[in-house]
Image 1 (cartoon, protein in one colour):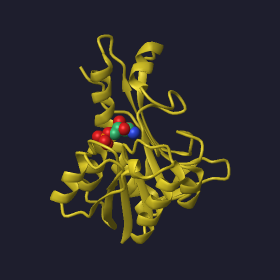
Image 2 (cartoon, protein in one colour):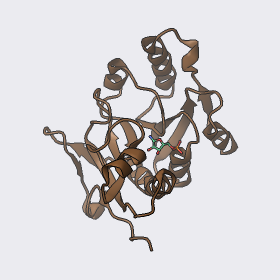
Image 3 (cartoon, protein in one colour):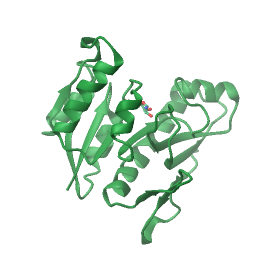
Length: 214
Ligand code: GRF
């Protein structure tokens, strides 16, 4: 069994998708939120998963918060730490501590639109294709090796909410897939920083296109 620790800050729908996927070989050791009011914590409790809070407001600095978070995470003997809507920028110290076993999901086709308000920026830029990326976390924000991406069309009448909803549906497909690959030991990062999915049924690794919607 691989211990998976999931960090959230709010709704937790990606965490939920990963839990519901019931990935063989993955034990969800805990869901940790930096916000006591994160809605996702309730889902974790209802599903018998250890739910913990490390409130960033209780710490005087980013370093102090990250140190407390790492202390808790380490007690769970994690094989994989999953950032699922965790809205805190982590220190290099934290990121390096879990190098190679820290995944994030970002709501854009990286390297386009790192940072916040990705859907609004995609609409403003007039792109025809948008999407989401699961990547290994490195110290540079939203910049680590790409594990899997899913693309969605940007429709003429889209607003931020409709586009976000279309992307989120894809997030819920690709994040469990990425975790499954990790747990199966099938992700390798090349020296050039590219992710290879090993194994027979890897298929078109790291790229999924949903059926185009009407
Ligand atoms: C997702 O869009 C994710 O890509 C981004 O934050 C959002 C979190 O949603 N990092 P949820 O909390 O998983 O529902």
